[in-house]
Image (cartoon, rainbow, N blue to C red; front, side, top):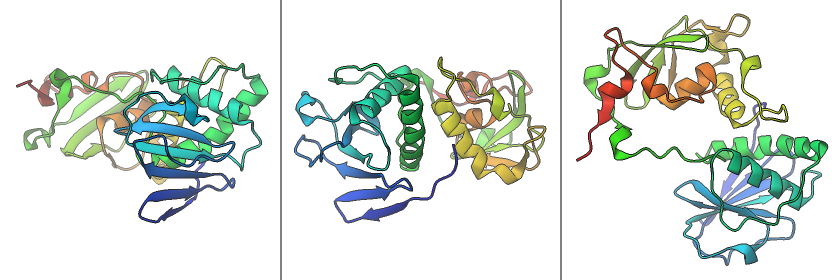
Length: 267
């Protein structure tokens, strides 16, 4: 996955994202099925940034609560709409998403699957900039909600997971500092799908690493400067491609987890 440059136009009703391939995305605030959908376009229905449905036929829309519509015009990709739709549905469900009213499934040959994955890398990265991910939103019960507080802002937490090691400080509510000298897992160790292709963990990790590429050595995979990220989730992707509950892995010198020190008790 490489960085992409795309243009964004907002006219007060919709956001239009023009992609380098010639394809484009529309983001609409809409809660009904009366949005305009052209031939060969694919739509996503979202509620609270969570994807609820992916299809190319509005007739399939059931009684469903949603508040946003994304329309993908894939004209820049040499792909059949039903193939790209199938790929997106499969990818979404592989992350734990439960989609409503799925289209009739079709089998994707390896070459078509790979072409769909390449296309999706482009527009999913663009959507990531708007906080939209093709994955199940990590809802946490009230017993597992966390809140930053000033009292922990100078505590150093340590993580040692599958070869990745780092010292981390949660300095502000949206600032987590990875101290210089942290050991990252190499790009080559990113988990792969069953077919050998790279998934969304790679997309998110690569985005973060590209943003901070001047701050680590990609030969020995050690950070050369302090790096500030937004959250425990971002830190875990950056260091080791996530895939585990990092709230329990970040431990201070007294053996206390960051979860233990920041969890909010239910009322």
